[in-house]
Image (cartoon, rainbow, N blue to C red; front, side, top):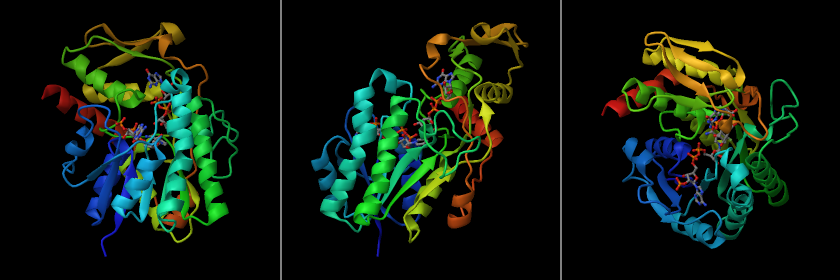
Amino acid sequence: MTKHALITGVTGQDGAYLSQLLLNKGYEVYGLIARRGTDTQGRLRELGIADQVRLIDGDLIDLSSMIRALEKSKATEVYNLGAQSFVGTSWDQPLLTAEVTGTSVVKMLEAIRIANPEARFYQASTSEMFGQIQESIQSERTPFHPRSPYGVAKLYGHWITVNYRESFGLHASSGILFNHESPLRGTEFVTRKITLALARILHGQQTILELGNLDSKRDWGFAGDYVRAMWMMVQNDQPEDYVVATGQTWTVRTFVEMAATHAGFKLEWEGENENTQGIDRNTGKVIVKVNPAFYRPAEVDILIGDPSKANQKLGWKPEVDFERLVSMMMEADLRRVIS
Ligand code: NAP
Ligand code: G4F
């Protein structure tokens, strides 16, 4: 029998890759879509699947639309990926973030209890919940200390998922995913901001790339690998929580250097902290500059995940390494800027 899945956040990076994965497995894929803009389906189109995903109007703050989406889709698997997902914005819109990223999770869980308690549920939790890290390598057992309104909202979503599993026996799993990127990453996130800017600079459409904290370290993986982990969690008989990560960490500075090398710049750094500049030795031009406007009120300095549980219990491991990820993103933006 054909499986039906409902994805919130279907127009986002992960929503697009997960839709592709599920369609390839023969699922009927339904996506909850909040029609705010005129062109929200760009990522689904880029993967060539826009006409295969069935869209249902709805919003994460509207419980009734979630119940209707569950009824219309007849979903037996629900992937809750929708969120205000940009950490920086969460200080400017903390209440919206609390609702869309935090308390909407209990609405989706309630919708499941009302419309189909047998449906399996995946919650998109995050390494941002570790924030000011309490252990040098973070696992499912590491205590949380979020550092942003986004991280705090996600922590609510995480614990309410655990609570509904324990209270009502729902098949609800929470994936604590570390940063994952791709050519479909939003341009506000640092990796894509870097690759797009370098491609534009190379083609004379931009002069400089301004960044904040270059020393911040992240465990960056490929989104295509990470949506596979989501699906594996939902298929497992036992609903549980899993860290999904590569186990390696890199600075923002290293990301810039690798991307610049890939794009053909010879980058050298001068100055320190707020005076830091990245100069292209080919041309003598400054192409990267630190701008404190991009610093955050409270930073997550470093994240490194331990994916052993996902590896042992689900058989999951990442296939794309950091270097390949950077080159994949850089190549995609070079192609986009030229065309
Ligand atoms: P993304 O590209 O920002 O996608 C977010 C999605 O949520 C978009 O489809 C967006 O729709 C939708 N959305 C926002 N507000 C909504 C609302 N009120 N009602 C319905 N839909 C709404 O995020 P992503 O990178 O794919 O991440 C997917 C999920 O994983 C998010 O929950 C994120 O917080 C979490 N996460 C991401 C990472 C990562 O590194 N990527 C790591 C850990 C956890 P519009 O396009 O219409 O705005
Ligand atoms: O790319 P970012 O904005 O991602 P961040 O804050 O780590 O959040 C992402 O990953 C989380 C998982 O850990 C997700 F839950 C969340 O939804 C999102 O997908 O920033 C990464 C780092 C930060 O330390 C930031 O301060 O890069 C630093 N950074 C330096 N300059 C910058 C910039 N970040 C952005 N966005 N823009 C800059 O100019």
